Length: 313
Image (cartoon, rainbow, N blue to C red; front, side, top):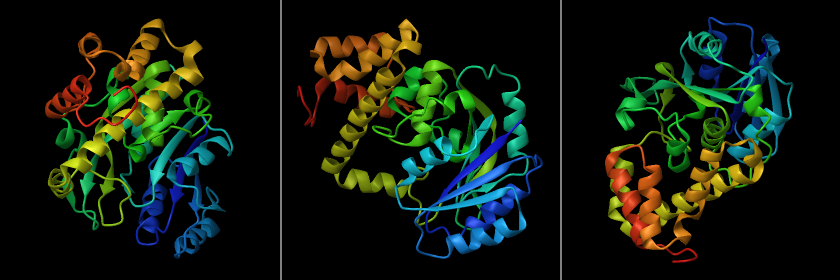
């Protein structure tokens, strides 16, 4: 069994060594770590090169800056094929049993179809002090596993996920992909299976330089202090998720079940429908968000089109 661990780095000199060390400490040892540096200007590549010189399982690719989505796509599409691919963030810290736990779970499933596996994680501060023992429970208290959930919101953290080769083959392009973990979760839930492992497998470090991160009170306060920006962002996310869902139809229509085709088509076109039809679609498919109050906001916006600036407004 071939296992590839894929890491995209960018100016990660502060924490990347700890992350690589945590991967080296895994109880499952038969892996290859392929690191694509996305044009770092600090000492990230020098640090990684030291690991490469002493561990033949580690490979460094120094490349131009293309952003996180394209960087991970290149790692998946343009390297030696594997049975399973793990995604690794440069600033996290993996618990020793991570690979073992997730590969053992994968052995329980049919990997002839597109599969994505993801686990819970512990949220920490920059010094790896745990601030939340379960990100899933602190943010939504449930894990997404169904297509209807993945259409509108994602709870799959890339660094906590693993995909099989059947799913990797389906990621052909990066256009209209909001984030690699969300898109792959969408494809898996539509064409194969999205599996949740109810166990933290790594430490999710939060710090000032996070590109993305856990929801925090300060982030929520900033949104509510600027409501017009909040509405713009919310509508931007809705319309972006519709484009991402359309990508699923465009590239994988023939492989989808009739029920999934109908669900995705309804979501993609919902804003083009009259109000009564929009309400009907929301109820028929139970389109929602992870939390009840987010669901209320989402459904209210879809029905009323309040502050919507797109076409067919």
